[in-house]
Image 1 (tube, rainbow, N blue to C red):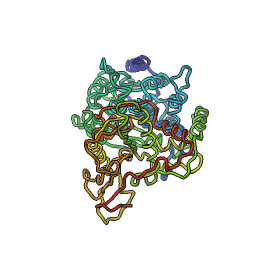
Image 2 (image 1 turned 90 degrees about the vertical axis):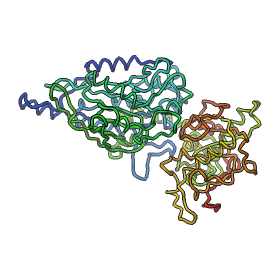
Image 3 (image 1 turned 180 degrees about the vertical axis):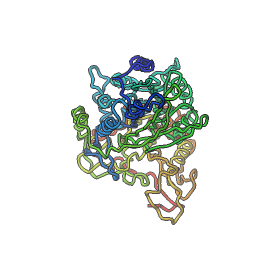
Image 4 (image 1 turned 120 degrees about the horizontal axis):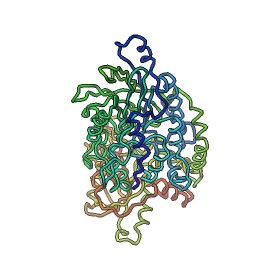
Length: 601
């Protein structure tokens, strides 16, 4: 794998040595005011570090799945064009030379726009396009971006091409070359701010990514990259940055604050470790948090070794918010010291798109709109995911049917061809709809929003039973006769919808009156109670097959087959081949919710 690190490792080294990356930075108003009051008064400086995270390909406030302006019940707005306007405002308020702009990762996956430039008109092709996210972020003037786990979804070549196209470094201190154990991407970035009448101020940014990449994108990174824990790599790099003269250390971490992991004990490293880093590693002033898709205006964590507070903030994903870390610094006893840090959020719905970004990417946006509006078939009735979390919905059966057909065809003529095929799918979206009449690529894309691929695993009846029990933990225990509020029935213990699975090819009840672990009742295959020794082929997405969600047995089960074509593409091919999307061709009632044997619905 080519490491291709030279451009930004040298850039980091140059700035670390104190050579300016851009025009010399002017002193802040506070520092200028101090200059006229005699030598004894300390110099002061105000610095603002701005941050976004989990942009997931959102350039404009546009919903490609609905072919309309994005809206939600809270009136939020999305997109880098809005962020650009906010950034311009902040730079005008603070002085353009007194700011730094960062991102905490998950940039090049998540919308039809990013899919289009990875697969349909790929940036990796000879003479291919410049990625729209690179164009937008270059134009806005990002200084550094941490790697997210979804950066690896399209493979190393696509990521490296994106890296080449960026005018900023992609940071990953814990993304190491598997053979040399040296950083495969720049670990850090240092920017030097020139302050009138005082020594320069050095601000270091350490980038950390998610250890779960080793599981979620194993097919791309195994044997090439390894991802140690955020805490251990921060403990190695923060002292180095301080020894290099960093006056301020900011961490951009693609990792949430909860201290939990979705992959159970498959890795020794915590998935959501940002607060752990703040608590355990001395010398950090602020952490830009990502990955969890939550909004944290300001969190303060006390470092266990120094007793000092570290300020954390996570702006809402999809470019809906911009974090501001406002630093007040004072030059005392021969060095710059952080006097205070506070974090706050700016809201994209309060501004309009920056026309500069709109003009820059109108053509790319138009191409993607045309692509997703291609008609691939017709539907005999409207299909929706509105109730798919708690009722067996035909629209999710479509996914399992397509996966079953693809796997059965792939295994034809092999020793496993005669085994029954079960298929797994999750109710990813609560708003997806395939309308009666013409069916477009965007209709089908809204049903399967992730770029997952398909894997066939070999599992026993007993393993499938355990898998279903684990999945059923998604429901909140509800006593017989108690009122059922569907808004409170699911997501027990914070489990997201994408970690609840249907399994087709069996029939079963989920008794939500029972405690977790003993809810699967009347589990049958082919009209008879399930035989624990029976072998099945299990059609499953690569996220789940690699351990995502920590479902039992599936990650360690023998792999019979896998492919690199996205499940979303397979669904479009299936519908195109059929021409007509009729539930009688794929829908079945495989499961239902009960309480002590009585159906809930």
